[in-house]
Image (cartoon, rainbow, N blue to C red; front, side):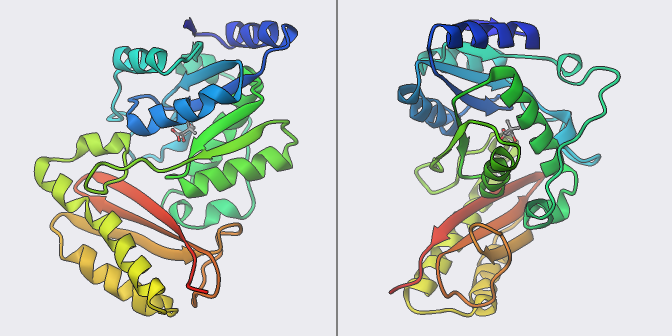
Length: 283
Ligand code: PAF
């Protein structure tokens, strides 16, 4: 496994592989890898000849009062997990390598960032779109794998790939959960043992909604009220949003008439946790 710290070295590595007729699969991350990231690497491994992981805690996707400085880091463990999953190269740039002194370009989408997480994190998706565009140009992959836990991010990436004509196949990796249902996240590391118990409210609230919808409920307000009551029954929780949306436009729906994405964000202690599910109403 090669570790490449500069854009020039990464581009040269990818260009050399392409000249040999090899295909490249890419898994971008902010590090502090867990089983969810490993599952993305495992999903990507058989899709191409080479498997590239990037680790970069991207400052432009964090707002002024967010957890950039506290974001957990453990490079040695990341590299060990990456190697065990069959990664052939790791792109590990620092901030100056990615955003030099005179950096001034941003990638912005018109609609998708104004929904869900974008409402309370106004700079987030611009930062994600910008860094992913740069990473695509640096790594030059044929396939890129992103987790479905960040449903909105996956939609943003699919949209920018189409809009900016990247010849890259975007693959979504399933959410990986702890045995009790909590979706894996690097931010789970911030939870105290007590908050860890409260963090279960997200997946449990999704289960409540699924049961309601399977039983024929279609009124979003009524379903959301049940979810809200459940989450508010846990200590240390503050709901950011619970929304039912069209899976493509992310526009909110008021009545469940077809497939919807149920997405929610809840602050548990200091950690802002997200979870989601695609739900089909009964036929
Ligand atoms: O999902 C993440 O870890 C990040 O948002 C990404 C896609 C690596 C961009 O910084």
